[in-house]
Image (cartoon, rainbow, N blue to C red):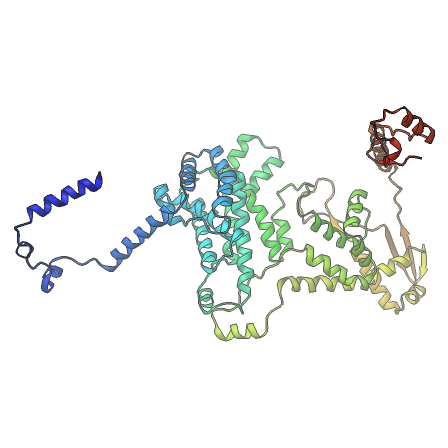
Length: 551
């Protein structure tokens, strides 16, 4: 029908123009450049903008309808601060669509989906946070991704920290944790990538030379400390520990600290600072920022690494611990623990567990990309890797304590011992023996919190060893404190085990005793002719599924 209408329209037009001289009617417009001069030219920026818009529309058309509907719905939920809908979209919808459409490729860029959300810049910042997280987790990020993710993080935190008053935004706690966690992970990833100079292209070297403060330690720490300060989370936690009322807490933390968004970001930033300072090797400051946080004994997916570090600590400073913890540690790392208890022979075991369980250390200082000569010198003589540097410092302490296990084994045999005799046992002179005794004394001392002390760095010096000694002139007097066996715990554990065995046996069906040869023959004679002789069967099925041979 449409073609018929078009044909009729074309026929009418041909009839009207049959006797018309088109050359006279049209004239010489556009000839000799007169038309071009009369009309304004389209400048290059405008042309590029039009081309970009056309390309954006084409890219938008390629997005699956399900993804478009999801983005529109997600945007509306954020506008409405509908926390339940945001949670569903974040924890379920995004992941399902990722698996279906973007498992091995990027999500559409924010500029492409901008028309779907009316170019809402706040939502686009949140969308980019998810976009770059997907790139880091599913796809290898390039240098542009690394810098653009940093720029987007800066825009997000500037919006949160530098707006006039608390921002009207609500996000699920899981998303808030993921924002801080991913920010630190991308910082760590960038530092590791930046430290490897050799595989860089000329373009990457030039961009790194002009990087400035991008993903610098200062900028990352500044964000975390600013969130803590803005939320007043330390004051909030202190007030809770002191039993302040809700009204008093509101007055203490102010308008920002009362908002769940800022309160949770501040709390998660405390955990983030613990992680960043540990990555940078500043363990004292890492513990200090956690002074207001009450730690619990919850064991998570890092339990294996925790037990590895516990094995190292217990080998260096033996002390009595809970039997369950000790047994679990020995089940996992019993072989390494035995080696570490043998002094110098256990150095490789210390190295193995330390490298397995230590943080993935990073260097706070980048290579000198801005100076070609210094960069070349850096390439020719690469610095020690952060993990190896920490390992070297750790093993120097371990080697200093290497004689302690042997010394300890001798002291446990005596209550008093002549210093000269002890030095002969150790194949050392008396001065060296005294040094080893002092190393052992130092290794058996630790700062521990007692009673109601809360600071992670404070406490009192206590002895962690069951073996102590004093030197009186030429005699070494040894005192060993023995702890009686905890019979109650042992009795309870074994009673529970016996009860489980009894319940298993009690709930099992009784076995059917096998028939004798005479009974089998009698049953065979009494059986109808069509029935298969019992004696031809391989055996009789008993209650628990086994077969019993006929006698």
